[in-house]
Length: 457
Ligand code: F0G
Image 1 (cartoon, rainbow, N blue to C red):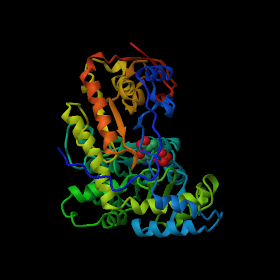
Image 2 (image 1 turned 45 degrees about the horizontal axis):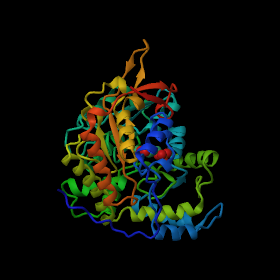
Image 3 (image 1 turned 30 degrees about the vertical axis):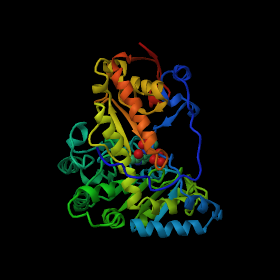
Image 4 (image 1 turned 135 degrees about the horizontal axis):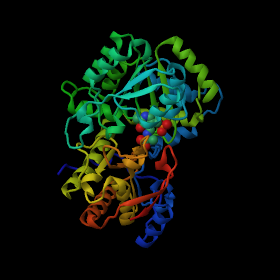
């Protein structure tokens, strides 16, 4: 078994977590229509719904919040953030945004036109939605290994380079305003992208004169995987790896709610001065002035500190080690998961966990309910509730994979909490034959997973 990597912090402030009885949990989940999005957080003991905006901030960040200079323009916190962005990413021109999708909305609002095609290793939902809202087409080009839950490729998030070449040849350069790569690749399990693959993606796009942007939410975790797994990077620092990655980028978007170690915030950067001018204009229209972008200035200070803290190797060893530890404990109990685990979450494979439940009865959704009932754990379905739909003839179309994502918030839970999570899941696995499927009794036509309601069969 992997040796557990010590939490590189001690706890100064505590927040009580709800400890409930099984009878109370049964009431909560029934009242929520068996949809964990409809649970109040006071019902949840261990909340693994997302790693986004759920970070515990450090004493330095909280001290920085008190040093917020709430000037509308030119706040000193903005200049601090500017220094940090220059140092880590090597970008001179950037704006803050209220969160990741704020950056996406501004960028695609300028670059994406109806009929355009935008390639990415895999678009995150909001990225895809912002591309599609402009009438453009979002194309996912991850390598085939990325879609196989048992393939142990070290960089399962990589861009499929040959497919990118083919797409450019078929679509024509004039219809591709930019190409993107998402690090780590959240939608295929938080899987990293190799530096070699980033370099090659840039080379292909540059040969055709297409700008290259990075979706940088979890870039620090990606840097750590490069250091561990890619030949030639063992002796480089996280900062050196980050500088090399971003040296290839013409710009980047970032939800700072992940590797920015803050509860709210985002970044958008671009090298081209003409594009950056348009970004500033659009930012003022929709997010806020260029020196705050929809955030309080104290938030900018917390972000400047958080970006620095997230590049600390000891922190990243603990962070990725925590995910690997939970994955190993689950594998020891025989629980089927997506392997290898990625940087921010462990994904349970509900098709193999609950083989007796057909896709029509939503096995991954049923599993989220079972985890909640057994131990108050909230994971999220990434399967046919989220991605399923009906085709033109009214026949149901199911997702390829039926997964439950257990996303681990940064610096929030300890090893003891993870042991508890592993024990609860192992208990559900032992009684898996008794878990029943669900019938969907209410659904909105789009983004139905947020509000759908179910009944047990
Ligand atoms: N890009 C990626 C890769 C993301 O994972 C997210 C958010 C966004 C963009 C959008 O950022 O939420 O700040 O507007 N992911 C969260 C998650 C919601 O749970 O994975 P945002």
